[in-house]
Image (cartoon, rainbow, N blue to C red; front, side, top):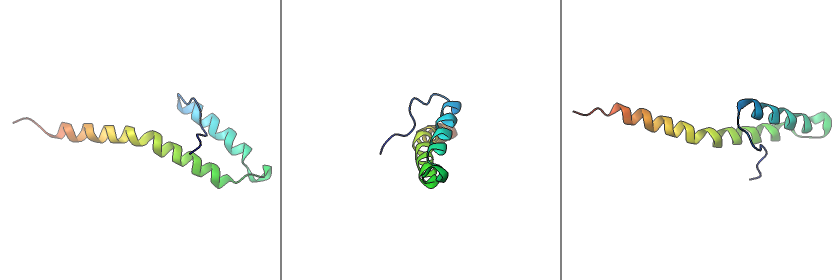
Length: 67
């Protein structure tokens, strides 16, 4: 998969790059907006899945109380 977002270190970086992709792929410019949305969603899912997995593991491990 080609990486469409580069050097994202903050939400503002992501937002800026997303807007640039959206503008470049707007139907008025000959682009397909659904493709941009798909790319953004895939990026977000991949980026945050490891974070949510870590949080889930932490929460489940803190439920186990020593007797």
